[in-house]
Amino acid sequence: MAASTLSLLPIPTKTASSLLPPSNPRAVRLSSSLLAGSISLASASLFPRPSVRSAAVVSSLPTAKPERASAEKMPKWSLMAIKAFGMAELEARKLKYPKTGTEALLMGILVEGTNEASKFLRAIGITLFKVREESVKLLGKSDLFFFSPEHPPLTDSAQRALDWAVDEKLKSGEDGEITTAHMLLGIWSEKESAGYKILASLGFDDQKASELTKSANKDVVMNSR
Image 1: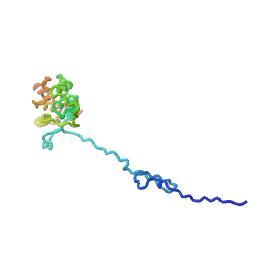
Image 2 (image 1 turned 90 degrees about the vertical axis):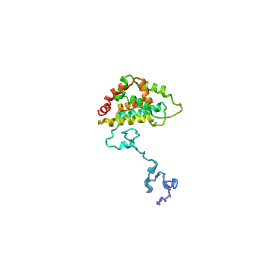
Image 3 (image 1 turned 60 degrees about the vertical axis):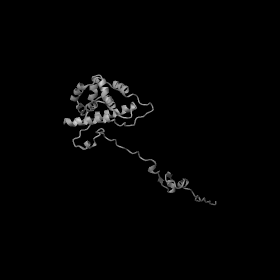
Image 4 (image 1 turned 30 degrees about the horizontal axis):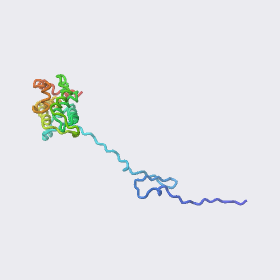
């Protein structure tokens, strides 16, 4: 019985990598380990990691007196006052005003709601709804198709009101932060401003301003709890 032999001739085989388009650095090349290939994954540049930006911590409000900010004993604004300022910008945008005025600062104090100045105002009948209503009566409505900037800049009177609050805190010589009460009294100091006129029309007067002065530092107590 004749023996037969079966020989297996080598068959040329194209590697998987040769099937991919040439000169493409971003291609994912997968080669079989049986063909002595290697596995290489796509460049990491295809899937960039999102950049993480840390939020800035705000401890002061805009001032027209930047030279004063370098003082060692410069008081900081209370957290509630900073929140009220942010709400003021939002209220200006809601009413489609081009700038953040004293009327917006007043609304911001009331929107924040937990500060002592807002409690004082509500106790004497001055509410957010009434202030909004008076603002529209006094300043009118903005154009329907106008969009306020993301951070409407302060009017001159609103900037002076904030600087007045800082000055009064410094004059007092007391420790602690600048509160919403200081901000409200700063609005009241601007006799020609919209915020002053609105407060006056709703029953706020110098006597009530004197009463508020006595509790000007109470935001600090609330923040420390």
